[in-house]
Length: 516
Image (tube, rainbow, N blue to C red; front, top):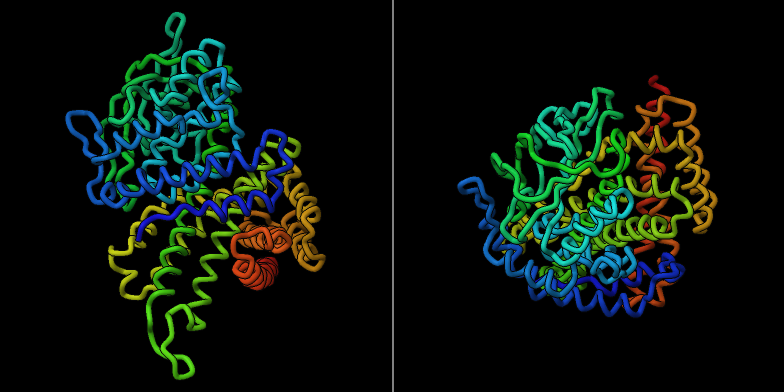
């Protein structure tokens, strides 16, 4: 089935969750831009999604080549200015609110996740340069990133250092006025490709043996030594590279020993981006399942031929997918709006991993349920739900495996007060008192007991409490939606499910406590 950009749902969510409160947000202009990008995604990006999945990338004579159509698609993307959408105008961008990425990133990922993976780190790279770069670095690299002359990568992972960045061994040493890097990085998306003229690598490397404090961030420009590309379950059109640095020239960005702080600017952008990737896949799964079930006649109800969607169990499954897509979109939008307000950084610390966990799980679960709706056809490649699942599955793993984020929510985020900031936001959003009571009970348990053992269940309480808060806002603004009846039905469905999940998680926390 052809891709259809969910522009109406995106802008309904942004309005309902307070985007209009941002001083630099013009809803009408944003809607016009979103519709334009939606058409671009439908006409240019989506048509090469399945073919890119089938063809995959090639690694020949030390160079990486992306599937047919990718180079032309990127040329159009860059020529139309999409790479510099939120880059400040003084550096050649369009200077739009970073919240626009909540629109374009979801649409892009739904149309072609692989291409979005290769091109989508530019806004985070620009923000990192703006926050930590020298004037020379800003003036040299940001215009090229905005124009599409360069594409950005993020080089963290090593064979012996995945989520544990303290184990990074790639070394950076000073050489006169500059630096050189030696070491190996793995799982680097787009570390080489043939669609841009140049590549901008942000590399985390060791400048001393002082654990995490011994890590610094560097810029490496140009083609690097790729030793292999991985054979993956999904994202076949996105080259995942293993690279080797051998006295490679580099520039320090920010201060020596503060690389992790600088890199987190990039990583926080990437985590919300991953959340939106999950939203996109869940939305795509709903669209396919809904259209298929609405057009397929199967069985009878009250003696009359019935559509598949008219059967209660099928209708329930489709509403399950729709609810997950709506709520995960709301999570990501809340995180982006709070990020741009820049008034409650502690709250952003809590919302970002929550959005990443819930969005990525929604993408995978939505694809699974969509397959079930289509039955045998869902298991075929004809309706592309297999690719939706394969492409979505990585979102629960990269940018921090979900289990790591659940642990951080129950430990670090509680200690620094982010969970308390979340409590205030829930109250501000009009969350029902009995639901708030259950949330506070869960929060009290992780504050007083073994937070690590309770982390998974605590995250479940947090996520489903936020589902109810977001659903309340959607319900309040339902008459502004394109289909108010659908919104009211789905948010009611979401709240019923969320209440059940909260109660279940609380019981599980109590059981863990009682078992010691």
